[in-house]
Length: 46
Length: 568
Image (cartoon, rainbow over all chains, first blue to last red; front, side, top):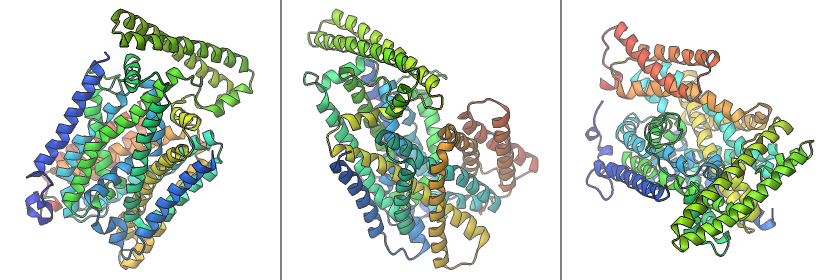
């Protein structure tokens, strides 16, 4: 199968980031921050 | 219900339906009807994806779950953001490049027609039943609580959805879902503020959080690995990922939402928006449930939340036993309330020893209250054997009806109706599209005009809507039908996911091996279902594993593979 670069439609850049990898890391980073905050909340009453 | 509540409820619903019909009138071709003319911006795609997943049961059951079990259910969604990233990288570019209308079209491109048709039919069977339940599940709760006619409630929800889904297609579904999501989230935020306001004057939000925390309701995350524990970090991050990949990647009711995006980028951003917001959204809904739990620590809750069943029991010979348990429940509640006030006082005075003592006392009384509720449920089974003893679905709606001010009751009911309508609309839209594109256009009438397929698509969407209403209307005739539909879904979902995993990630496997593996895998799952007592959720995993494993073995036996269609 072809890669993203083969289609002009798929070359559109994401907002705020230079590449899609930045957007993906934002989503994963957001999840990690949420889990950390949940951990703090849980442990404060354990 | 007051006149003001009825005006708010029906005003909101009719506005959304009218808006959907008006804004999307004049669909001229099949592409604009089924793919919304590929005109949706990322926020519309994202809201549409979120609204499709958020059914009425999300807003009825989830707060009740937090009331009963705390916030640990949020861990179930930990795998979802990762799934959104995987789908954005792999699935979306392929679907766009092939310009597909449905997910199953991709299977013909990768394998062949028979594999596509098999997957489409498996989807139609499970989702066709699911649409009926999406209508029935909130109807049964609303009709019980509000004393509405169940059949009429089913018909009202179904007909309202049919009006704008048949008329405006995918664009109407996406446009109305923006309003529906605004109502849903706005309603839940307002609900949180109202509950805080309804707490006794001496109880601050900080006190409420402390009460919830000290009574084990802020147990958000648990890193202990335990296979018997349904919700922990590990089950969420693995099982949740697996489930989200299959639901968002292969279920047409979701695939159709992001295929309506203006471009690959807009669709990706829509899915990533879901990845960013889904966990906080579920946290909010669960937190509302926790606030309801705190509220009922200071105001006496009913011993059983389903009032209709309570009335039925009171007309039986078990009434005296029920009354005795109610009195025990009340005495325990009052003792616990005193203990809670003392606990808060100790916390404010920083008196650790007294705080720990009161905490233990309160939690002991909570246990006793739970035991009384369990006895009450056993009594329900004896007095009314056909009654459902699980009353957590009734906790939030009972609280809203009893304690919310006029007008806001109508708004919260509009939240539940909006959720029911948004998920049903996506299901009907997907059922209509799959029937038209994957079966009618591909195998029955191949040479029709664009107008012909547009009409066929509308009629098939209408037909599925009618089937859903009929299914919802007769649902009460079967015992535990919701579980039955979940079982049917689990029986078919594994096979569908297995086919898609082969298609996307295992290029070694070709069409015949995939098809035979799917048929053997599906037959084996059905056989196991009838001959063993394996828990039905396992069939998702077994079905998927069988399809992938058998396909790999068959392909090896059949010999070296030729290049797949998309590699040519």
